Length: 268
Image (tube, rainbow, N blue to C red):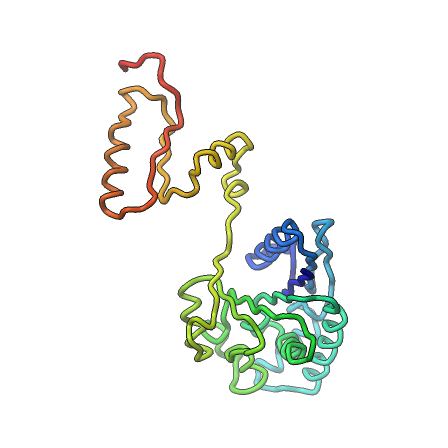
């Protein structure tokens, strides 16, 4: 599948969403898809994932900032309409052949409303890519953005459902918040939490990761680690009692994993 990922900025720019789209792109490419990242800032960091730089996509581009200042004051100028046309033309050219477009925060924050409006126009064109709107943050429900938002177009694009798009958010609280904002049933919105590469996050070496996979430790919830030798003085009985109490309180896939070998002095 030919996939494009769109955001204001991309790795190596530091940011939560930038990190997420970098990992999404890497995982999709590893699964055999053709993936590209479209952003206003960033560089190509993986030989398998092309980076397409469109300066106007950047929320910090001078022209975008100038129009944002007008929009914050409630003014929709001819310059806004011009930027929408430019972005629509540039994006349409870059999306030729794209089957699915993932747009992160572009349709929930007011950082680049010309981009939001351009994407809306593209989504309504025949033959446009399948659109997935991935919402991490919501301008309309965040107090610090309220003074910058006004009734009507283009601000309402951030709080109305786009029937032609798949709506995704990252948590159950944000799921309920977005459903109320757009006045849609909760099942209209998918919840996909940000993932975690456990081996990288915990800095697991290959041998340790082998033990984790062989023992299916990641299926435990919670996993109690007891990195001690098997000797009476280590009070392993207490760990067993704790595990039993946890299982009784809330049955689940709980387990305790010993991380040591039998001690040489078994009586101490």
